[in-house]
Amino acid sequence: MKKRVLVVDDDESLRRVTQVQLEQRGYHATTAADGPEALAILQKSPPDLVITDLKMPGMSGLELLRRIRADYPEVLVVMLTAFGTVESAVEAMRAGAYDYITKPVNPDELDLIARRSMEHLQLVEENRALRSSLDEKYGFENIIGRSGSLLYVLDMAARAAQTDATVVIHGETGTGKELLAKAVHFNSRRREAPFVTINCGAIPKDLLESELFGHVKGSFTGAIAHRKGKVESADGGTLFLDEIGEMPLELQVKLLRLIQQGEIEKVGAPEASIVNVRVVAATHRNLPAMIEDGTFREDLYYRLSVIPLELPPLRERLEDIPQLVQHFFSKAKRKHGRENLVLPIALLPHFSNYRWPGNIRELENIIERLIVLTPGNEITVSHLPAFLRRAHASVDTLNLELPPQGISLEAIEKDLILRALAKFKWNQTHAAKYLDISRKALMYRMEKHGIQRPADAAPGEEEVPEAPE
Image (tube, rainbow, N blue to C red):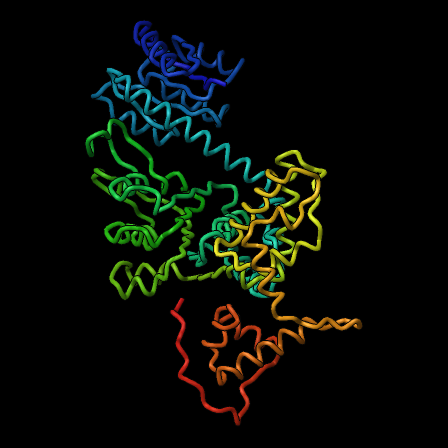
């Protein structure tokens, strides 16, 4: 469906030319000769964007802007102004105009402003859609899994959501860092304001500053119009900086200024602008190691790490895998119209015995692949990827005897931990590596089972300290 633009100008020649230029770019454009005619059109069918001259006889563009903002707050307004009245355009921006264009209108500048306006409307619509589904998607209780390590992180995140403190989320690729960031935002007092994401590793370094902070017209080659950055778009809400470890050093100091003082400098702007955003960052990188290497600022790290959250990898959440499999299976069946497809419970151990280096994202992709490619109405072992079949076979080589009267999983876990610790003379680092879990996960399980190093245990090798968080 074409986006609709209303052009308001008392100069018939200019508004007709502008209408043609917009229609050539794929918009549905209508025109009005003055403010009252524009309001009559708005009353019948509000457009997505109004482009209005600032100086018009009778009702001025500024008065029309105020009427639109009061009665049609979802309609964006861009002001047309002569070069010598830029100050009036700035006044219009303060009154709620989205942007302004100077006369004579450059077709490329007009197209750019229109596209940016539509992108902004799309962002607003996406955030409205997100807010309408908060309870279903972004409540902490709806993040799948009930393992102890996950519940600990969710508890901390829920407490952080009630404040404006900066948050940094650590976790391997695919662990759900953005989902957790959204849960923090949509359970905070900023939930009605935008949640804006920028991936610091996906944008070329020479464009990242403009993308973050915006730029003014003429600040560099190709800057044919003023442009808001992601920070300004998130004003009042949350700015999510994904892969913060990829941000260049020269921009880190500007981000630090944003966090400390709430100020940003647009590229080419003569003075700073004030914004009100909450910063949530995420990374899979070891930021303390980057500080040692001189590639990440220590002062920025501590500003970001007011609330550090670490999402555990899926291999440390084995008890959550069956629930995740069932969740993704039901979701993908609906998506691909395969409601009759069955995944037998007997296949779940194949999923639980794999390491999942791609974490939750990899698991979801594998489930979707099975649903798309399975020919019949039931998934069998033969349909599973070879690596899932191999993972299950490797566990079978343990030859655990299952007694008919039943067995305690807790007791088996405790016994395996004790054996691994004894094997490595109670060196937790080596025992954790042997059990294919992190040392932190091993320490958690030792505390869970009440396991303590015996006083008469032989001294083991010196522990290898984990990288600080």
